Length: 85
Ligand SMILES: [Zn+2]
Image (cartoon, rainbow, N blue to C red; front, side, top):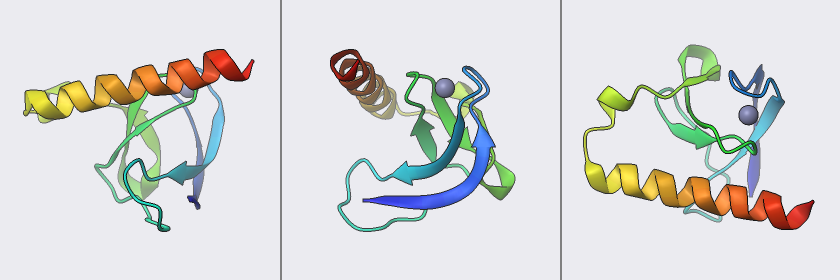
């Protein structure tokens, strides 16, 4: 289920994003600063202060298992996008 977030532009594709869907919860989960998100263009981003989208800081993603998860999610998004259009 998607929740409304403050509108901000993807730093990569410039798309205006004003909603987010939690990847592993069916409930309405509001993202918090520092949460990672993936734009429909496939760009891996994070919510900065005020939930403004910014490029991810990979140096803060320490665990390689998290990196793998993000890359899998990115593939899923790109796959969905490929099938949708
Ligand atoms: Zn984008």
